[in-house]
Amino acid sequence: MTQEAAGEETFISHLVELRDRLVKASIGIAIMCAALMLWPGPAHIYDLLAAPMLASLPVGSKMIATGVVAPFLVPMKVTLLLAFIISLPWVFYQAWAFVAPGLYAHEKRLVLPLVISSSVLFIAGVAFCYFFVFGRVFHFISEFSPSSIAVTPDIENYLDFVMSMCLAFGCAFEVPVVVVILVRMGIVSIEKLRSIRPYAIVGAFVIAAIVTPPDVVSQLALAIPMCLLFELGLIMAPVFVRVSRAPEERA
Image (cartoon, rainbow, N blue to C red; front, side):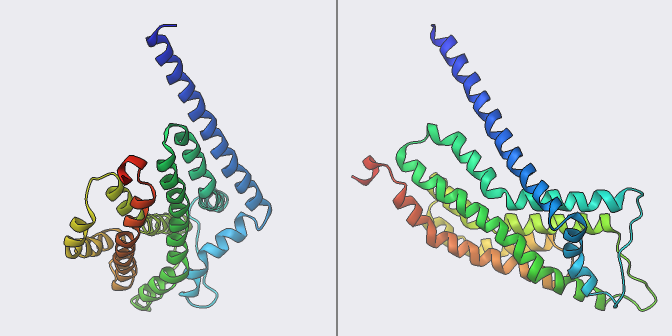
């Protein structure tokens, strides 16, 4: 077998492995989605998602559905989204299992903790957004609503808002992982990151102002955790670098 043919065969085997990992990740999400549909069910899941919004409205208020199939599709989308979030550890594990054979032993010691921490941090960001931010943001907005306006949010618009907010907070909570990767890959040093701390703080507030509604509550709720997580990344980066160092680098 020629070297070119061997390289082509290796490339095809990688594609097959990637396909298998994607299929396994999709199956995990599908199983979780099916389980959530059986219990507690899409309707109940959407009711839980809508609870922070309804709590800020007058007693007895409800949301509206302007689309014919929206009462069916929106709860199904919410269920699928929740299934994906819960299945993140499994999805990240499949990604790790795909790249692990090509890594050295010292690199594997870095990847698996990063996979776990990425999953935990993203889920923590989404949970923080739901349990802490939503209630305060919706209450803040409802206080500015004139009494002549009947606030009846559309379920599709509400879902879009919730998804964008959860994605923003989930990604923002990945700051420590980004810091660790940048330092481990040698792109930037710890000393450099510490020196640009004031710019990082300003950047956190700018990002929060862009991705959150125009209210102080949600902006502070995103910017302050980002600053704290940046500091956490500065603390954890040297530990990860030391643990994942190659034997020749330790000499």
